[in-house]
Figure (spheres, rainbow, N blue to C red):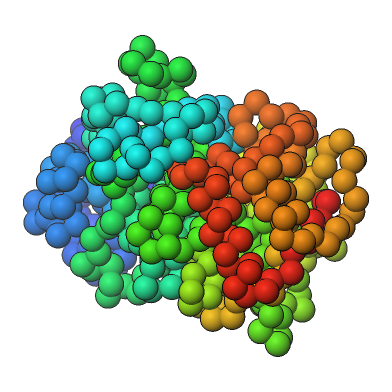
Length: 485
């Protein structure tokens, strides 16, 4: 009978080989004791992360509210960047570390949002406020329960799931607590970057206002009533939950939280939610850039001479302007250090590159390669931008509002000064173009009208947001401009 095989530079034996235990060398004794006592143990070591019987407060909460099988599934709460890198590299096909240190990940078949598969649960507490129609299709409570159970059942089949807790909204008065439960390390790292990360002591007793169940690797049952495809992205405002099935595109989580803010802020706080980027000058003057995904919000707001408040999602309250997110989600197609040095420099360790093409030998990313999608992206913490204003808020009211339109028809002038009536017209009509790759099936710019420059994410009727914006422009005497990008 042969002795077990010893792995090079490891105190472990190969579990696939049977035989009597051998006497380890004396020099390895201390290392074995260290490993057995959980010191420096990671998920990559045999038995590194396993379910255990002394359940934490978080595990008990997941077991009670979502029926997560904590005796079978290893629940990994708020893991570090390094731990998520390790898991992505080991367990997720196609993951790699690029030459800049960023992690690459692939979202599978879906490389953009699926707006046709978005659903809002029709229930008494919210149904009179929701803007029902093509943007917000109703889902019955019964179908919601089926999809939610399908998502939880899938998560319970995984060996490990990740829990990411964070805030949406930098103003402590208005922020909401968000919990993400997912099966992919890529998704966990993405939301770790995009949410505002609480201090470690706050995570110990974190209780969410909203929970996202991301089972995107598993399809919805397309024969369930109201389903039009294997993809389903559904929000239940009564249960304060979101369920994702049939798409692994990480942007669905980010925009799901955005829709929640489009509902919660006006209804509960009379705060205006905006699809905009924002920056602040040295004299405290704040500029807002409104626009659809891919129209230039991130690029234009990343001005080295102005402090970045945020690149995509904001709220305008009586206390000023605050960013919703803890990170940025920048388009990467055509990116270069010369054209966008701030964004290029933010792509480093801790960032997630999504659906990019890289050289397998040098690990250099080819940002001009659109083989996988035009919608190549990078998610990075906002503190990776050198001139980011942290906390990401301003007590000053906006002095300039710039409506960005990407005019595929070439009709609009490059820049126009707008009066109040023109501002409301362009805000309500939202004439622009859908940029290639930002939605499933969009492969080239398409002229479109997107109310409030945010139609896919709106929860309430556009006129409700427009009236709030008009009131704020009048109150604070803000200038409005139309910029054709």
